[in-house]
Image (cartoon, rainbow, N blue to C red; front, top):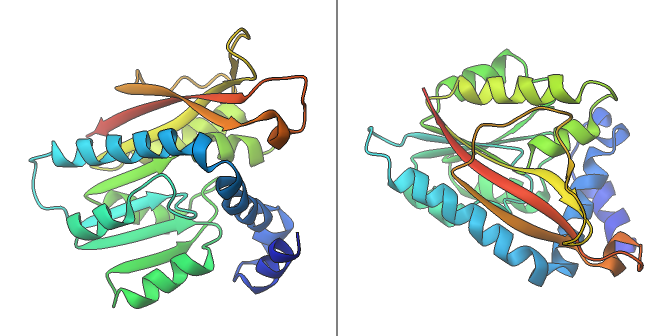
Length: 231
């Protein structure tokens, strides 16, 4: 808790991001990933592999700019692959962790951070997305819905999907439902919004009982669906 509080103090973030809990959530993800490493690893590897396969299968032309929406700690994408494959990389999130900011500073202009609330993307974000060779949204959609105002889940999800559709090529990786044991029914996470038919899907073991706080229930699982969108 002391380390998380210190990180909250020193990480650059807007007052809006702090007030809405976005900075705290970003920090919590770092520490949860460390605690749940063996549970998260198959999911992270599947996400990275899907992105790489989509890009490598594309023979449409130069790969100038890659945009990562909700980039966070770059858990779901392979930073090395992006660096090798694209001329430029733009990371968009409400909060950028310190280590990601340092990567951008050390890249000599190849990597760029943009601070923006993707629940309400403005014209600048729209322009960046339209100019990208590839846009990646990885496990962001459900978080936008979760952090958004009650009753607007489907609208928020539709807005984000519309942003991706304006890209030349985009990859959407999102958790769509959750359950606490294999015997339970799946509970949707997107407020009724139906993403496109996935090209791939897998189960993400998100948290064991000691992590989600209810020892009477099993491992919290998420159903993850991955799709590629092209104009």
